[in-house]
Structure formats: C-alpha cells, structure tokens
Length: 117
Length: 110
Image (cartoon, rainbow over all chains, first blue to last red; front, side, top):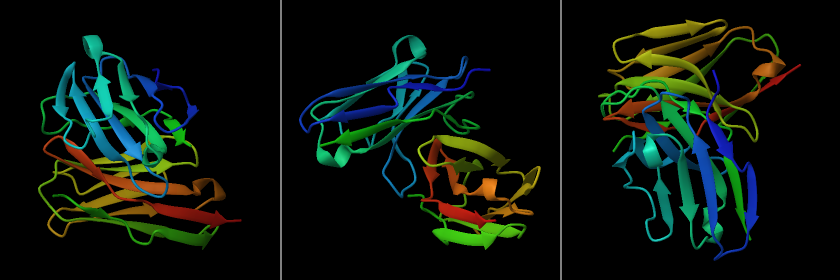
C-alpha cells in the first residue's frame, strides 16, 4: 500500500516570496491534515479536512496561509508572502476514519522542509 | 486546552538496556494515544496506537501503556539497539484533534 506522498521535499525561498506544497494521502483515507513542525518541537496542526470540507483551521494564519483539498483526495498548502518564522517542516498526514471524534491512526508523509531567507 | 509533555527531552543509554519513555497529558477525556518514531529529516512513523478503552499495546520489543485517569502513557523498549536511536513522540486525540508532545530524543550507544 502506498504511503502519504509529499512534494517538494526541500524548498528555499526568500522572504515575501510564495511557495506551495502538495500532498496525496493514502487511498481511501477520509481525513487529511497539514502540520507545521519547527525544529525541536512536536507537530502543530494547521488545518484538518474531512473529505473536501474543512474541519479545523483555527491555527492556520489565514492572512498568509491557504489550503485546499479538491475532490476530497490530494491537497495543496500555500504560503504567500512567506516570513522568516515560516521556516519549518510541513507534514501531511491522513487517517482512514471520519466522524469528528476518533479519527484513528495517523499516517505521515516524509514532509516538506522550507527555509525562508 | 490539551497539553502533552514528554520528559526527558533527551536520553542516552548503552546498547542492551531496557528503557521507558514518558508521556503525560492534561485532559483525560481522550479517544486514543499514539506513539511515533521520527528519524532525522524524516516524517513520523506510527509505532503503536492505544484506544481509550485499552490499557496497553505491544509490538515486538515495544510495549505502550495507557493510564487515562492519571493522564500518563509509557513506551517501554526492551533490549535497546543502536537502530532505536531516534526521536519518539506521543500524540493524544480528543474531539477529532491530535495534540503532540515535543518528543524524547533517544541515543543508544554501541
């Protein structure tokens, strides 16, 4: 079974530029998550989708970050304009279950490492 | 607001030693707890998932326990090997949202 796919693995940009990350979850997984992981810390949830609807985006900096999940499958996360503090690893995860309470086991991709200069 | 703490932040042990990693959480109304392993520059790999109704889960040399009432989980690693060196993170799920600890970085010395 193919895992969660993410691209690109690495991206270096200058501040105020834009960047987009792509994620393809495990086939059949209803719930998709984007996390931000700063070096030395645990992942912090940015946005959670169930199918193609947003369940939780309370921690997403909406003035610069946006995300979409078209057709309930793959997803893109965009940052525009980027700031120095956005340097982090952006992790995509998916889980099989939906329903809001117990979404079950999380499966992660390899992550996209962003460096903002 | 759920808070998850993992102490110590780093641990170094000689090969062959049995060890315990700790995870504590503030709100006991969780649905499940999951332990992950993260190698440098990589994503998170799921190790064990414990549902709220369970007390423990085992996989090979790993055993995870859950005590909801005290807000604690432990990950026991038997007969540690250098290949076990990684960062271990726990995450608790409540109301469909997972909250992560900052992890414990384990180094197993040959």
